Image: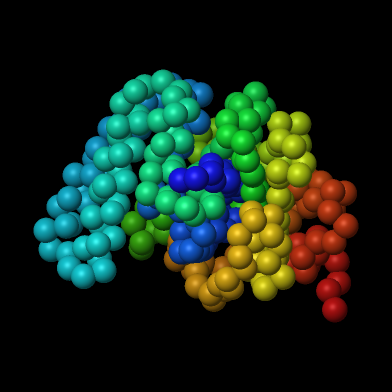
Length: 298
């Protein structure tokens, strides 16, 4: 490459459109993103979880290698690329220390003259301010994107994701309801605490405000991102052409399960601090947010 590319960190929030963002940028002709969406590099470094990360990556290579035996066409090409990316990533993890050159080399390998590379890992929003500041300064042009989604919708999507992981499909609705009741009842242990932390917009944004140059931080509503003007704003921030997108495509949407009226009312009350914070920071909230705040929407 003749010049260093812009580096994007997609740092959250969980269940707020980061997978859609990664897929959109991966398909953009001016961008180069590896097929592993969430690298979790800096939380692995922060908590010294290299051994676990290596085990997981090697297990995934073994699983995908088995699938390669029966794959063909586009599926074969995708799996082959995925395995290659995982093996390259294993080489970085094997160093078992923060190595900026190895990490940067992984992001840029194969990028050619493309202008943007990146790492979309929502868990980075949980990192300490000092780590975020280090990330902001590791390359000449580093930019951060943080996506926000209506708190009730994000919360319920995250609850459903965790319930689906831990229960068979026949017990999915019961598991989701039980987890919802636990968290809104005040349980912050284990996965409940993680779910709440990943949707704590105030905590994440106040850290990012202190760690990142405001000109290098874009905060967007998911509801805004999935529009023509919103995508144009993102593209301008990243310095890439606005190529349009398929806004109807859903990524990791999960099994549908509507909230009951009682659950929605309870969630609105429980998450009111997130709505109040957003209302003080942003002059105009999307309609979905205003409805869940009890405001009339024309």
